[in-house]
Length: 290
Length: 324
Image 1 (cartoon, each protein chain N blue to C red):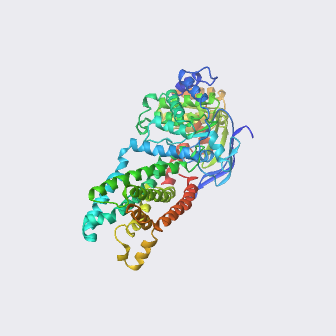
Image 2 (image 1 turned 90 degrees about the horizontal axis):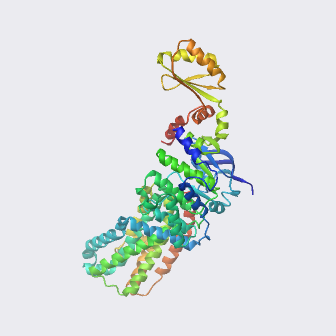
Image 3 (image 1 turned 60 degrees about the vertical axis):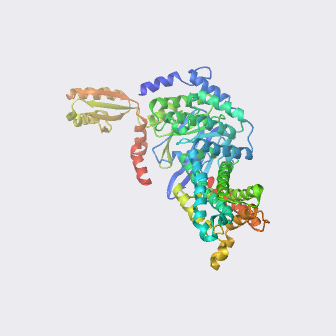
């Protein structure tokens, strides 16, 4: 063994650029040509990471299950379970329920952001990203942007299913799209909670557990399924402050063609708050991510 | 500015109650290969992560290429590259996509990143595998791609964390050739390894780390000299003769003679060849037949044993127990 490696060493002794095997000359050539282009800006690096997320969808299409089948199942299940009981008929209920179930499904899907990041960190690819001379949050911003595309797919699928079931939004295509935009904005913002949790917890299972614990009460104790006036006072109060209720109200207003009320402003404030609090917290943990 | 590639002083990093790095001082010159040698859990990787700005030190200072790793981390990141112990690649993407992604992040245009990726795939003999997902790569291919990703823009200093762990001998030689080519191109390489042979083969200078502390530093020859100039290995023909042979050798050489796991082998660290000839003659006079004898430089394993008082392998199990 040592004889063999010794001879390798003599052969390939570093004596300058003009000697060595062809393979080594090729290596030297790429080293010399590795000149540094001008540094890219924060937007460009974020979009590059967004592109990475989309490439992953192309190579691992299975990850589209959660943004296609899951929302369809949610819509069908809840519409047919609650429809008759709550509104007398499926058709009547879906007019009320559709914007809410879009919000619920998309917000549930945002959890996967955290587990994806946790897995990436465990595999070591974040070591590479973190050692690059780029705007530090861009890897995370890019992931959230890529996820926003997934949320858009989920929303589109659900709108399709809703229309098939008899949903007739009064706001028209523009109203529906604006409503979805509000949902996407909110989802991007709460994504920062999951990025923070992903950097706090040591396993993707734990990340999932905590996310679930936060999301279950938020989605069910809201105005998604029923009007909060039927609830006991304390629960009605909670539903009133629950940011998800305001997202749902805004989406209902926009999709239903109604006047946009104060809920929209509250959604903007919550979204800004999530980014401003959990963005820096995430970046603080990101410095030492492992 | 100074001409040191790496300079640390009193570097400390603790994880919970474990002091992974416990007061490390390093002064590593630019150019060539510097190896950080130590068993699993010695703190090699943590030192490297601190130097590559991936982990912040709890105490002490570290300067890389003249820049502080905490206060000037972005400038450090501009000048260094890291190839981590576990491939720092996106396994779901193809090799080509990975290199293009890194190229874009360094500021190449779409077309520029594409052509840079082709150059690198070609130089690292990965062109045919370029469209395969990285998770389908062999260990050696993965490692080559990882190093290629580290030189999309040629770094002044390249960190290689255990670059050949888990590779077969052929892939390992390929990685060694790449490292030598990089050094001849002017890049400084800092590598960690738990293979003593690897440090011996590649490195100009070696820092030995154990339990978070530097325990020795020097060239391979210097480290070996600190143990004694050579090792005598003797294998007796008849195992029953071993205790007698041990007595004879001990008397003639005047040093400790160790019984190896091989039931017929004995080893001793000797100062020169003079006493050895006399000792071998004495064995013959005592009627002990030898199957084999050799006089060689001490291995770095022996260096490690003589400096730390325990072998690298012992420590590995301890570290694992501590982790469990």
